[in-house]
Image 1 (cartoon, rainbow, N blue to C red):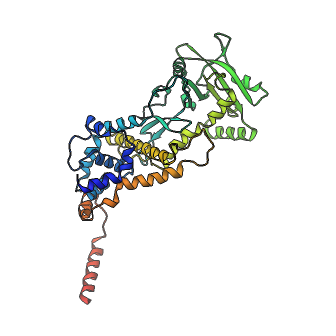
Image 2 (image 1 turned 45 degrees about the vertical axis):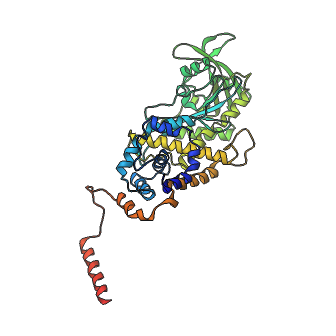
Image 3 (image 1 turned 90 degrees about the vertical axis):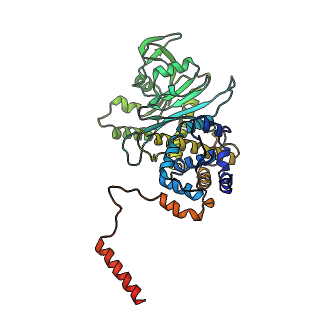
Length: 431
């Protein structure tokens, strides 16, 4: 192996250490690396992927970087190699998700959410990223990328018996909640009263009387209210649960109602304005497992999944999709960016003593600054600027040139060019 590749592997070693040990074998299994040519190792191919997906170099800039590291290569060759890497990157991403034997009495609190991704300047949704994080460790437990038609659903996550799962109003899905309840998965969701058919619950079976939430909440003198309910599914089945509610203080309630009026095109109903003054959750977690006050308190921490997504977008530029809509390269970019994000988080955890920002202890810092520093270090190793070969600059500039196109690059008008040529010749003559 050449000294150049040795230097590359040394500079890129920290990134490679965080990948599954079988990443070489997976590359050949999924035909991402079939033969050694200008990109002659799986490590080098990963570097190329991270140039494009991680540090967001354009195809020609990626070709220029590889040219400086080794030898001349075209952006078309880079494009073709990247397109073949999709299944390999997805396999690596799956391997990096936490797995292992689950103890019978283990308790996982997971938070799920989805986020949209689109190209620069696009108005509609191109893709959705579906994420589940462990609320204690803030580790990513599951991630999936779908096209714009892939809606948010609790069905797409591989939950385990005994899990407690939290979601926002978008996950008010009676049939799915009932199915998960039968599988031993407990749910906490922000309640949307119009999406959840709730019935009064007797000692053993529900009756056919709908729960009047407005009446029940209006008649309570406390700021907290817990109501036993039965959730009816479209199939006519019932799932036992609770509605836990907390009355907002008057200033916050009025602010919530003001936002409600501003966000609705039509005048909101009195019922809608009443609900705006309460925080309401539906849960299948028995009160013997978590009391009402605990569930309402832990739901407030659900915001952490929003912060994880925000960090991935603001620090790692996850929302700056640089490929065409519904393209193979766009799919590669999204999964490559997620792989890049997970490696950076793993390195940050290792440097921070094995945890990034555990919520099970008193917190003295947030992960933002640490992730930025680790990103800076990893980006430097991906670019491998210290290994650039100065003698390859001409070839680098050549591969980064614009192709012939209908609209030419702007130049000065011909009279200005002639004037400049005349002036330069006159100066030469004087000298």
